[in-house]
Structures are given as structure tokens and as C-alpha cells.
Length: 105
Image (cartoon, rainbow, N blue to C red; front, side, top):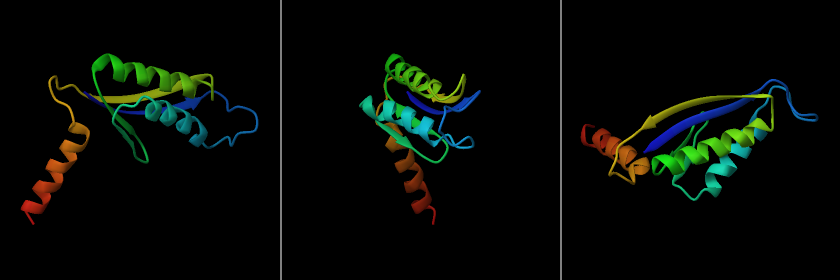
């Protein structure tokens, strides 16, 4: 499965942090994802991770817990592509899209 998710803290920033910025909290979440060893990528709004259901959801949970240190609440937006028996789709889907764009130019 591929999961695209976004986490954001709310409910009060820790002392000494920038009140309108969540980059430290996002960095904590992305660090958890990267340390997981699962295929992943991060863009300006979402982090994508690929793996089996239980391992991906465990990483999302750990990332949410990391963000929780930056506020009293955590907001999670999650979208999943659940496709049993397939792997390498994090890059494969994009490669097929780029090929379709090239072929029709």
C-alpha cells in the first residue's frame, strides 16, 4: 500500500518555537518516516510511504506521536492506495504517468 499523509500540531507551541511555523514538528515526523527504512518521499504538503498495511500504519502512528510533542493536539490527513500484491508503486505510478505524457506529446 501507499499512504500519503500530513500531520500538524495545534493547541500551543513549545516554549522558544516560532508560533506560526510547524517545520520542527514536520521534521520530527519525517525523521520517523525516513528512519523506518520504508520507501518514502516528502513534498511541500504530504509525505508518502510504501509498505505492508501494519508496517505503514505503525510508522504513521509513530510520526503522529512525534508531532504530538509540539502541541496538545495533532491533525492527521491520510489517503491510502491499498493494492495487495504490488510493490514499487511509489515510483512506478509516477513513471507510468511520465511515460503517458511523453507518448502523447
